[in-house]
Structures are given as structure tokens and as C-alpha cells.
Length: 330
Image (cartoon, rainbow, N blue to C red; front, top):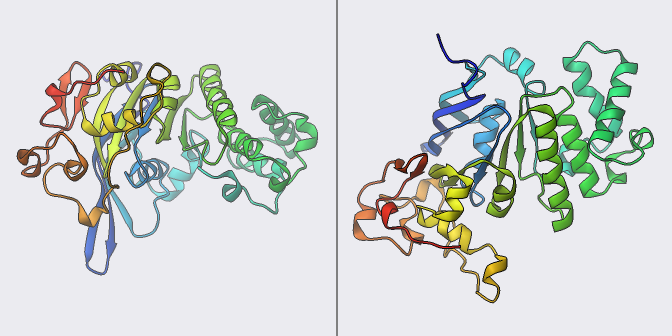
């Protein structure tokens, strides 16, 4: 009998995402695998173009046209990858929901805030319009929007960026989902509002026993909120470990590069070290290790064959042939 109690809420194995075009297909996400326990925050980090958002969209079943996903995505023990659209609609927004990067483009500018929050409630729950209205007010209050009874009649352009993002979070948690995907939820927000939004997501997670997939390029945000982190590069997981281990001893040069681009209080006066170059397009990846053309640790063997994601120490995985040699201190 399967261990349902201890089984992960979300489990992804060997996820591939490809796009087709005139000259054939190109793989943009390659053999991604991770799991998220119930009530935990899993951080997915990496630069733009590393495949984080496509991974999230595949979980939601809303990949863009021309994209094809293969592998396995299990939610509550059941396979949901390529589920028939009608069955996926009954899960999306109710049991799995998502906060997108830019609330101004995600909210409908011609519809009032209250209508947009009520939409998910009426679609998934047996509520009257009056009950949905009352619940929408409570949801806005739960995400710290002042005077929700008045704000519910506002349009998106009448709210600040931080308030719009709070509305998006209210919509996402409206039906008490088991999994919340937060895809760069603080993009374009100032530092103070960014901290408030991330703290709010963490508080709601604890109150509702909700799991969170936090997607960001900011390892500092992941350090403050996540339990485990997967670092993605060029569509691959290159390092996977508990957060404290990533900061205590990263085992992949790309992770080290990300950490060296973060200002730390105990390293004041030390210049930041940007990673040279940029993420190559999926049709122009180097041979062997896909980070080898930007890596200061690279040796000729790195360009011969792509390394597998291997367990270096208990629970700490790295995709680097020199992982055991990595030395980095905070």
C-alpha cells in the first residue's frame, strides 16, 4: 500500500518540454525532477531563460501553443501531465493556483477587483453571488488590503503595484488551493513591498497548510522563505539541496555565481562578481556541460559529456564533475 501520508504533494520526474518549428523541434526543459511536500516552500532559482516559468506552466497545464511536455507530473499521487482539458480545469484555480509575474497584465483592466476575485469562487464553489461577494471581501482583508469593502469596487488602475499583487494573491488562494505557484511574484516592486509580499505568502502558507513553488532569480528571497531549492540553468536542474546547504557549501559553479552576485552584510566592501555572458538559446548550447562556456572552473573534460545530476552528500545533488572540489564560504 502506498504511503499517502508521507508522499509528496507534487512530484515531477523527467520533465521534458519541447517546441516545434519549421526546422524541427528544440528541447527547452530537460529531465527536470523535484518534489514538494505538503506545507513546504520549494524555491526554483535561475536567470531568465532557464526554464523556470515553463516548468510552472506545465504544472498548470497552460503551456503556450507549439509546446509539448513529456515525463511525469504527479499531484496528490495522481498523474496530471497532459490530463484532458476538462479534468485539468477542475484542478486549476481550485487545488493548484498561480500568481503571475506582472499583475497589471494579469488583471482585466475593465473589470472591478471584486468581480475578478469572485470569478474563481463562482466557478469552483457552490456559492451564491452574495456569499461570493462576502468571501471576496474577507479574502482582500486576509491579504492586508485596507478598506476591502470599498476596494472591491475599484478597477486595477486605481491600485498600486503592491496592492494589485495582493489582489492576485487573493484570487489565487480564493478556493484554498493545496499548491500555490508564485512565479516571480515581486517583479517590478520596490524592495520594501517585495519583502511584504513574500512574508504574506509565507504567512498564508502556514495558516492554510499550503505548499508553495516560489520561482525567482533571487536566492536571498529563497534563503528567507524556502526549505529546499532547485537551481536551474539552460532548462536543467544543476543543483538541488536544502537551502541551508546551498548557502553553506554550494556544489555547482553556477550556484556559486548566483551567490557571488548577492550583496551580503558580512561582505561589505567586497565587489560583486557578475556571471560572464548570458544563458545561451536552447538551439545554441555548448557541448558537454551546458554551463561550461561561462564557467571559471571548466576543464577540457567538462566539454566532452554532459554530467548527470548526482548526489554529492545526503540530499545534496549537483550536475558537475568537479562538485566535490567546490569550496565557497559566505
